[in-house]
Amino acid sequence: MTASALAARFARGVADETRRVGDEIRGVADEKGTVTAEFAAALPAAILVLMLALGAIQAAGLQLRLVDAASIAARSLGRGESGGVADGRVAALIGPHEYASSSEGDFVCASVSAPIAFGALGSPGLTVSARACALAGGK
Image (cartoon, rainbow, N blue to C red; front, side, top):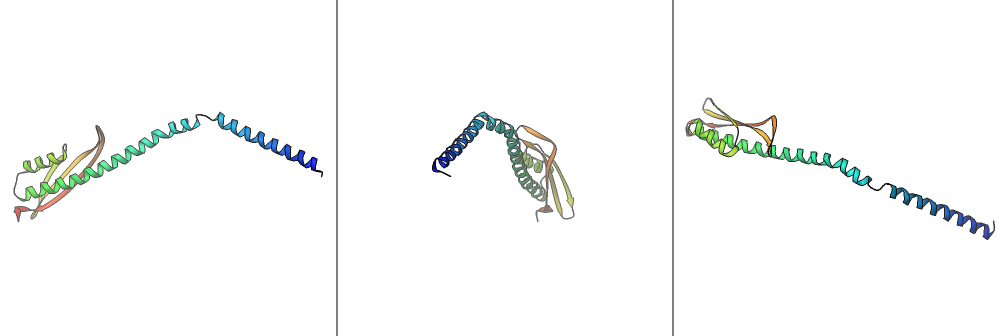
């Protein structure tokens, strides 16, 4: 093969490669807006996952507050205070809730439950509860 034939073959290869790259560039230009469409499709799912994560964190925080409120109510009952006083202390800590007390031998127990709410939105039927006991008679 002569030098001129090699040069011509090389020139054809370069031209073919240049055409191929040009086609790829035009193909990318034809796909303008696809990233925006994919982002718009994925954004609601990402927001939903974020909302669920925040709701779970809020429910865990409510559980901790309920445990504290139930133990405060049980200690109040153990000191001989009325159920109304104990319920008032729970209301100050929790807000809307359900309260019940019971005696079990030498112990008085308080059970507290409250609905899970995410901001102004409530979760119908979902409640968190806690129960605590204290020695009766303030001993």
